[in-house]
Length: 340
Image 1 (cartoon, rainbow, N blue to C red):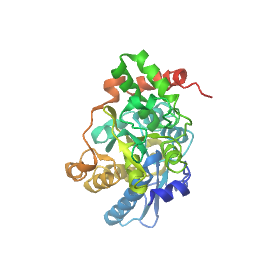
Image 2: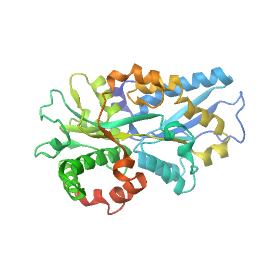
Image 3: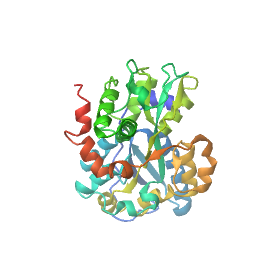
Image 4: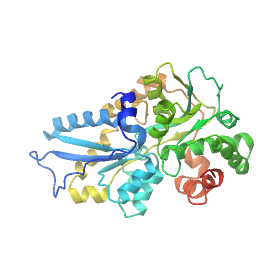
């Protein structure tokens, strides 16, 4: 699917048709539907992955399956599931959003992160900077984003998981470069002083930058940056900062829904297929970093430079602590972003 067409025709949040109410294990005569509720930039990944999984499942069981997709800001997507969106699986941007499904209604079991390899993250990514071709503002690192006259595009951390990765990557850079949390807060305030608009999700921010031609720099997922470079060849460049964050987007079965509909077996197999060699290859082809396959890692190594990365646990003590300190009501983001 062309990203350019995707930008123009696909709304920022895609609704998905409800999944068939199944009372037992599906039969061959009954076409099966699954709903994958995901975050913004995974559209292209799951279009290809879902086709491959449907072919695999058909060959294994003789049964047809259609996997529907729903996309939006990761935080908003989690709230939609809590409010009743009938997801069989969630593939979200950060573990905190799946933890919310545990805490608010028990939609997902508490041991979700132990059910699959690599802490239930079949791929990793990171946060990079996208600039106009030729880098006219000479952006080389995070501290260039706070210069006067540099307009920065990033989504809203209140609704977007990607935006939370963006914010924390910038915060940790400021903390290490200038010394301490007080200096990091000042750095974040200056950076967001250069942000003219906050979209609700990562794909919306990409549209603002690429289609609406706003901003000098887009803070983006690495895979989104590569898609932009591929689809808008000759118009953008990717800048890898000297320090950035290791993003580990997690996946989980929505236990309450799959048990009610009898779709647990196929939902679990769907997520396991992400770790299979074919799934890992599709992940690399769509510019995510394969988490477990050595073959896929080697195959796509050239498009993924080695980086100076830190983890959410190392720098912030995990998502629960980071959410409370930075993104809860009155947290650091509310303190630094005062524009109404």
